[in-house]
Length: 257
Image 1: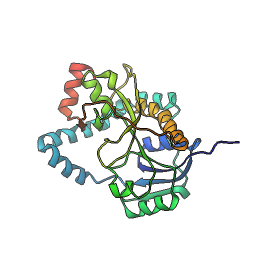
Image 2 (image 1 turned 60 degrees about the vertical axis):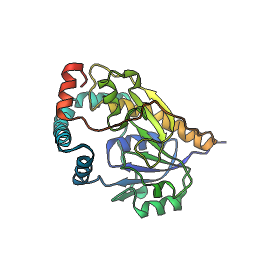
Image 3 (image 1 turned 30 degrees about the vertical axis):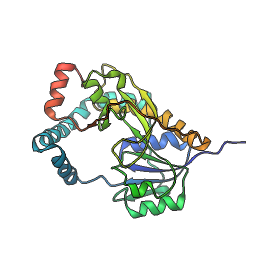
Image 4 (image 1 turned 180 degrees about the horizontal axis):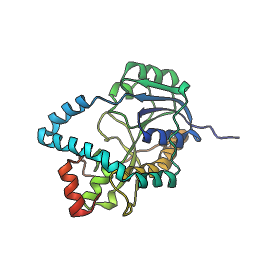
């Protein structure tokens, strides 16, 4: 008798990591819907960062984001090599299960989740999900975070671990979603090992490749009724994009690319 596959809905940002995760799960899960949210406006992101961090830091972060477009081109050969090594596929989901929404927190998303009633909701690359969405069905929402939580919450957790000489906590976390920023209970964590040719835009590929089997196991746990969360690695801290000045300083003083 063929074992039942988990029935899932994916809540995604519109990016390659979402398609890599979709294709990795498609053979082992029944994907009922892929909900893709529009990228939040840059203006809203800048306003939020200004309130949190101030002008000086935000201007430095924007300078780094612009610089990273060039950096990604320089690292493209290595990116392509890792995509091939890990057999990551970027095929888009079928149109008949794809739902594009302005925000993952829209009422239409709650209605869809209630209608489909999946075994679990897989989250990848979205904005913070509101409590009203999380509570609309009594099912686990499971996220992949490219960092060891709660020590490296926020963005670029692998990069910040290397900057702080904390390679033993350079890794990835699969965790339950709550209303905080990467604060949900940890399901699985895996450390990665980077190579000399790696850099800012390739660390996440190692992390995603490590996360895929962890996500598959978490979904098996859902079906088996054995899904159990635990505390992660502290202390808890929220991280943001580096500024251009920080990136250049750490590149030349610590060789973290």
